[in-house]
Length: 262
Image 1 (tube, helix red, strand yellow):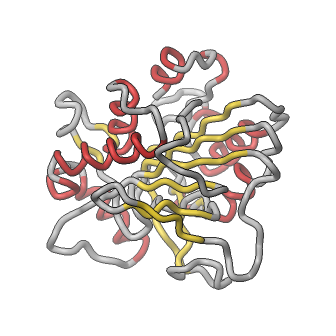
Image 2 (cartoon, rainbow, N blue to C red):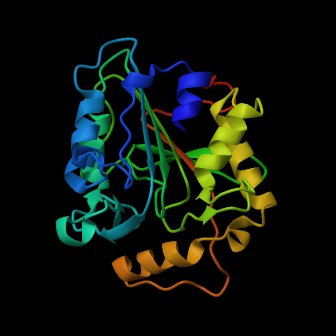
């Protein structure tokens, strides 16, 4: 993803912060505190004309929502490296940290490659697309009236799967090494020239995953599934894992007419 941002979209290399388990710097390890600080750093002092990108590739889960603001009764979460001791990062917090601070003229794209990530940013609208590419926007604004949109800016998120699905790591796509299926398909859509609109990216990503056999043929699912089972008390069905990348946004738009740009 870093290579794509710097070479294709000309993001300055020193404008990117990466948190990985391989880092020797304790502040660049994906702990809950470091991920929180990175989110605040990303939006702090944003100005009109700024284009921001947040990419997360890792474990995701769900937990019970008690406020009544979630349609399915579940909050979506990210699982930092130390989630077992420090807890998960809930979608409400992600929305507060990344979405609400966006002022007019500021644009944020979020790429969330994780299980149960469909509405990980708690954005007001979800693009519900069928296999033919037809879509409608679902209204996910909380019944309580709490505002989950921006402060005038723009926020659009691609995620690895629907809220009730799991996302896989696989070598079936790259043929070389295990990668997040959603991240690989997003980069591939851009590199193949299928990134002209948001709709073309989403349909390309879904088509690539389906042509690889859907979630059923993707490797790495066992680990992801086990994590999800441990966190949610759920179980994995006999049909295997399936994932359909999702698109959410702070406002509705024509996904096939709106040009994609970072």
